[in-house]
Image (cartoon, rainbow, N blue to C red):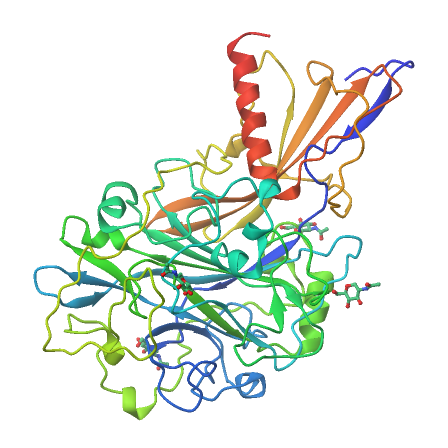
Length: 514
Ligand SMILES: *[C@@H]1O[C@H](CO)[C@@H](O)[C@H](O)[C@H]1NC(C)=O
Ligand SMILES: *[C@@H]1O[C@H](CO)[C@@H](O)[C@H](O)[C@H]1NC(C)=O
Ligand SMILES: *[C@@H]1O[C@H](CO)[C@@H](O)[C@H](O)[C@H]1NC(C)=O
Ligand SMILES: *[C@@H]1O[C@H](CO)[C@@H](O)[C@H](O)[C@H]1NC(C)=O
């Protein structure tokens, strides 16, 4: 771009330039599948079945100290003896009323996202002994606002309460690798069977964001939630004054092959008896040495997100690391077909709260298919990168798709082949919620150039290489002849939208031969 001496170059941050470093902890193998829950049911059997990942020392009573004594972890960093657990998913056959487990594809991923508070780049590791729950097992409705979510910048106070944010921390990503991926946390309920059959040909990805604001004092609380809080945009944003300390952020992903039951009449139900998904939840117990995790949080900031790019981590496979099953569960069938969910958990469809301890009798034979009420929310693409090349399985990359606003170019949507590792990582600049005063409107084309940094992950599942865009950072440089400038500010949460609009405009411009 030519810059004449009479012009002033202004960096417009169409999105925020913060480098959101992260690393992605692959836990490709389960350490167990069991009715164990040391947070909700300490010292006794859990009420419902869980898919468990992490330390071999996980038990009905395990704490950070116990987990650290485990001789292995099913996750791929041997220093991570944390425990990660979520409900498993079942299919209830309408004809027989029986339940069968739905295959979990590829273990789980635990993202450690390094989102700082505004004006303070420091993040805290989880303190030793820290544990928490995200989500509410008895929830069966959605009261957090319209469906789908309005743009985050438009959320009202009522849509931003902690209760609302917690409901929006759940995601059910309909997987069909033939079309553009949905954005994370787009849909907050489990689509019904007909929708899954018709659209989610590669299954469903359950997503769970954890609170990342901490009161700085307590490692736990009575409900395992009150010591932490969500920032006002669920993943990013501002911490409430009551919980000012920003922790590393946790985000879980698990994939279930619901499509294996396509064409069979029945319904999917979480192991806690929830056919709606509103009651999805997950648990975490810190199982790192705190000082080690703090060092990792401070230094493992390579934008690739790959654990291999953090020299502190000892990478391992994680297979063959199992918890010890309590003898009471040794013969419990959790695979099926079986007459009830493990633990005889009753199906409760809501919309009123489920009640604790409701049990189904194996002889009742009640087939409850179709009783769950969830909206229909059709496919909506998140930010996309046309993926034609293959990536290494499990690879994570930060790609810089450079696209100057070249009107003659019709391929402004970056393709995978144009993604290379970026040498110009923008410097960190913390997001603020106050938009600078606009004095004149910026003029984009043609005197503008832009780069888009796609932070994405790819992984291999069912023999397919899948690309998932986590977020897009767009940097626009505009040449203006005026002295007064404006800096439109797009809140970080709107990156995907901003980028989508942006890409669309490129296509539009190209199509019209500007
Ligand atoms: C910066 O953030 C960290 C982590 O939240 C916190 O421990 C520290 O006290 C903060 N520093 C200031 C000056 O607020
Ligand atoms: C990040 O990791 C890549 C390898 O994936 C390496 O080439 C690069 O030098 C690393 N960047 C930094 C800043 O360490
Ligand atoms: C761990 O559990 C899996 C699944 O039940 C089993 O295949 C494997 O043999 C177990 N490994 C060990 C070391 O016990
Ligand atoms: C919606 O769920 C909440 C939390 O579980 C519950 O308190 C409320 O009663 C439910 N609303 C309805 C209409 O059932």
